[in-house]
Length: 390
Image 1 (cartoon, helix red, strand yellow):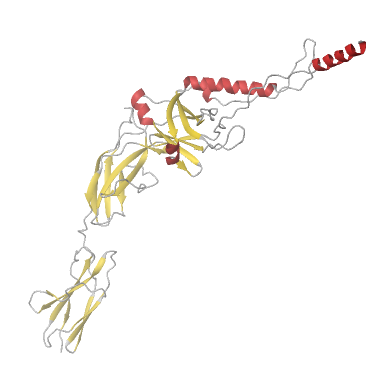
Image 2: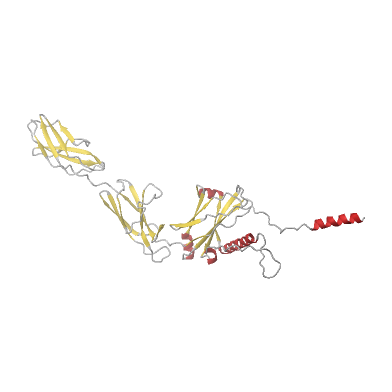
């Protein structure tokens, strides 16, 4: 009996010696936080860029993404925008039971870091407002390779608040089961206020170019004095819906521009935008569109020299060629002595020479040549050349 009692006591002591660890939180399975969020201003948009979320906190692939939520903070507090500086790790020391000795439990630093992240996240949610929820289809529309690009219109904020101020942004990913990622890295932007629209846009056509002039905007979109850093000029065909890249990637300083690439005979539309001083990516409102037709009414140069050589019953003509980008050819004219000139060539000839086989022997003729462009504009006549077939 005593032996049985001893065995029971040993078993009870054995069971009592096992120490239970601290209760562990369940392993998080939400999406991994986006860590490369970036923001910059283009025009009156805040442009957010970040990598497409594809992993869970466990490291497993994220296969059931439901949406991405974009949060915005207007005039964020310094606690959100100041960079976090990590302090040095605590010095290692052995646990002591006496007073005055620091005791650092295993996992204390990780718990402290998790607590700080939770406090910072709660502070962000207190100040932030949901700016947009991107569904899967909206994410696909905004994807550029492996990145997602979201544009937040600042003009809406300016119209509501009548003022501009610093902004902070953060994004989170949401699974179909509702599990949410931690907040991404917080990015900040102090937007520049876009200038107003230039006025009185005019065009003055000259041969081979259009000279554009306008008046600078005096105010920005909030009614404050505008800070102008230059201008960009845009052109499109009347049949086109949108403008392509500006004619001048580098803004011109003054309120004028010369377009040397404008095509003749095509209905065109122009507009101009001012850019903010020190930030050429921020363009102001467009000037009122200027439609026009750049008609070719400019004749090419006349041939500078013409020679006429009589050979029996014909006259050979040779002249200096004309250098004109839209040259269609040459027209030859002949006038009898004391008579009016008559055009010998029905259509323009391409080469700078011509043979008159209809000249009558014994009669003097005066010859001239005119160059003609593709729009049908004729030059002044060349110098006269006189010949008399024999």
